[in-house]
Image 1 (tube, one colour):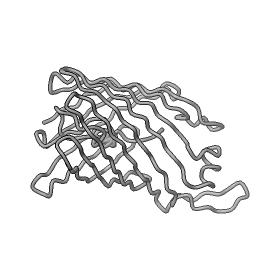
Image 2: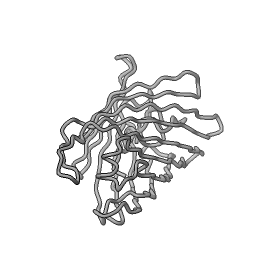
Image 3: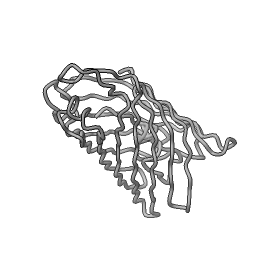
Length: 245
């Protein structure tokens, strides 16, 4: 599944020792949310996908602006040519609960992310996210009968179900990511008829005892690789570190 980490980093989880989150947020997609104590935060990562035999490097950044209504701005760039820009705000209805909302733009769509979660005092973290993605009106193609079709206005929906746990020196999380295509014709033309196109199972362990927060992430991507004739499962490994500035 091609997706950003931003979503994870910005809002996946609000951990006790991190104040701002996943991209996915990528700054917006990870599991823990950075915060007020560290208004500027970056992540560097290197990623490898098994079936594609492809590696890439990426950079994610987030800046909280408490003097401007408490909003944050975030971005992700990688060597695959992908980028994501986002602006959002995190609300704290109670000491342990949060609601994170952001708007983002990528090379092929605009996104709206809404994530709600709760972090228990014993270190357990849980949250859920829905992210509609609105394709740009510039993806023109032809169907099997040679008719011109505008595929650019499609709506795709991503959902995340996240559970994590913080100890004194480590953070563990599992995140299930599902991607749904809402357009029958696009699903038939590009996804081999699948509307529930992909499911990712993301596992991450982060060492939190120092400010560098190095981590290892392993992802099982069901239908994560398009071979040209079918959607095939893939594996992805990622190494990185996050750094509150």
